[in-house]
Length: 271
Image (cartoon, rainbow, N blue to C red):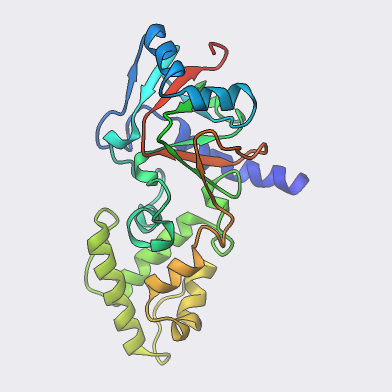
């Protein structure tokens, strides 16, 4: 329990920066609007009925912190594209667009990042209960933060930096963390050049275990770095779960992200 507490103390500041929400710094366009209590009540009886029943029966508790000061909000993450906060965007592009093992999960760039507990959310704004529309998909992390949910990635920030350095070292192009198609080309180009150089010269010393394992030995066992990342970052291998609205969610504190459909947000205490 003590180590879990320490871990939470390290990671929650990053997670909380994600769920502080609707200042729209990381979105291409606004995704949230204030709605009336009448519309909110109507949604609870229709689109959000399954989520409402799951919440009131303690089956699926989803919370999000926001600086908004209104009782009822309607947020549609499909309207905007969310970039990774406080780090480069490589891991989000990989999960959302490149690694086929993640193809059934909601895109994090078009999702609301939330928690199954209120811890942290209330310290950074108002805590809202999140009731997804019935067609939404829910990705469930294996830990309190996606940053600590991969077995071979100690820090996604370091992982992002290593991806940048891998491309920057073995190609002449500037690494692109916005365009997935270009990122694929850059990774494959860098991988080809890396293999041609061989063991005689290696001007890259990755800090993350995942990338260092690849450059030291794992590259021999795989066709390219994308194939390797697809296997090592596989959601099943790393304890992630894919849920539908109404499914039971973990009772312990984990990060979840809700996508593919809008969600009704109700200020905690107003439900």
